[in-house]
Image 1 (cartoon, rainbow over the protein chains, first blue to last red):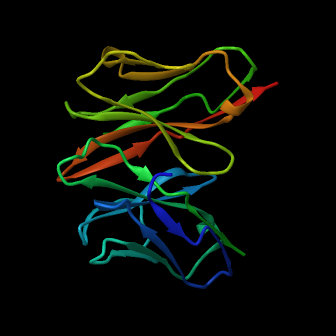
Image 2: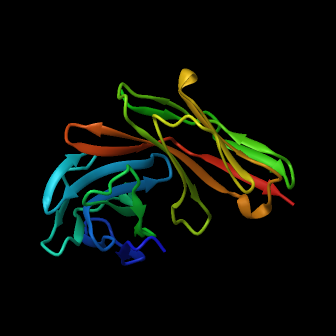
Length: 115
Length: 116
């Protein structure tokens, strides 16, 4: 158990809809990362938040957005969903103050299926 | 550019064989970290090992061993006496500094199938 909690574990929705994925980082971790894993793209970095502020952006579509709240949990919002958005979405956390060594702790992922 | 290459897309071995998964990385950083993660069929990412760029000692943990060679920018992973439970996708990853943020970039993964 990594200590990172993601909900929901599975989600099935239709094209054009909007969904929200939730992530609670490990206790004490300030950074949250979102990754997308689709069959043909591997693990792609989407976005990182650190202590409530966006820190880095990867290959995140404009239809997607994220935020990190004061209690450090994060949400990834996916809108105008397309079939190609079907993927496993991972959240990871890191950077307990003064103890960062490059390792990310991953949640179990949220599997999104767009029909 | 910061990049990880896992040239082996799929490997299939018979139980008890040894198998080596290759990982080659590119980075301009002098301080970086390398990782291996395992993703079993259930989908979660399981951390296996972390190496920093200043520590080239090879490591052995049970049936797993890692060979880090900065001269060839490689961080290869060997499973000795493979078992069916080792069947999974294995990812090599590189952690590097991008501005003020540390980023983790993954290779494309190697699907290992261990046959009974």
